[in-house]
Length: 180
Image 1 (cartoon, one colour):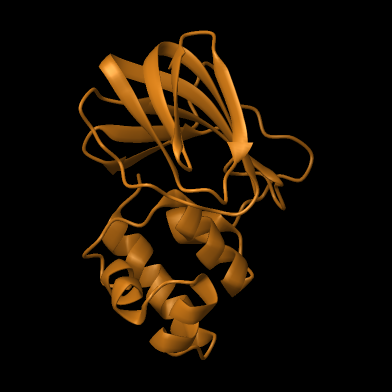
Image 2 (cartoon, helix red, strand yellow; image 1 turned 180 degrees about the horizontal axis):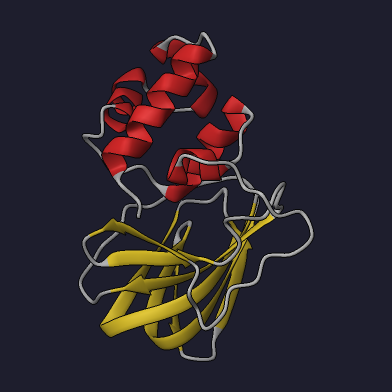
């Protein structure tokens, strides 16, 4: 299970092992040193896009940060009946990783569950992103625009733009595929 304090501790250890100062590493990530310290100390939840950017800068698989171990599968990873690795990011926002054990993955497919009323921060990360609504309805913010989606609708967008998904009226579930 995902634990922000454990993830933060792993990030700190790996940053120090890589001989980066807080200031140098924050600059590589495009954030302030103060903001980075809040993430590294476990005081602030780390957006998933930033976790992948940290892993890229440290030249490691994101699984090392999230779960404390490397991925092991090179041929195929199968997830039966939606039983991937569950991660509770924070109250009202969770996801199931559908390929966490695959080595050198290029895509990150996840089933995301959002409770109504949860307002996540806008995030940005490299690559592109695809969302397909499985149940409920979503308000998706991408840059300066907003899109309203229902079950069966999808959106594909430039993930370098600030973006967020918000459940409307009830819990929403959607498949997201993020390009690394």
